[in-house]
Every structure is written in C-alpha cells, then in structure tokens.
Image 1 (cartoon, rainbow, N blue to C red):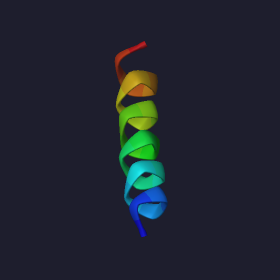
Image 2: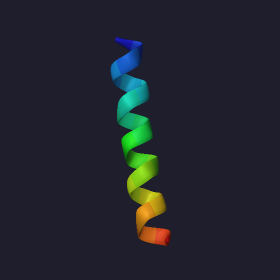
Image 3: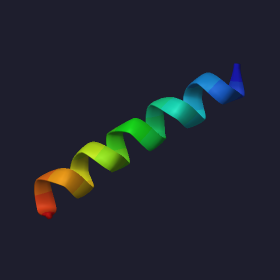
Length: 21
C-alpha cells in the first residue's frame, strides 16, 4: 500500500516540476 502512495506523490512532484521548468 505504501508503494502506491509513494508513486502517487512522486507523480505529482514530477508534474509540478514540469510546470515550473
């Protein structure tokens, strides 16, 4: 279950980085 949460958070962070780039 934790892996799912981590992957979700990582995806959101990556999306945010893309917007800022």
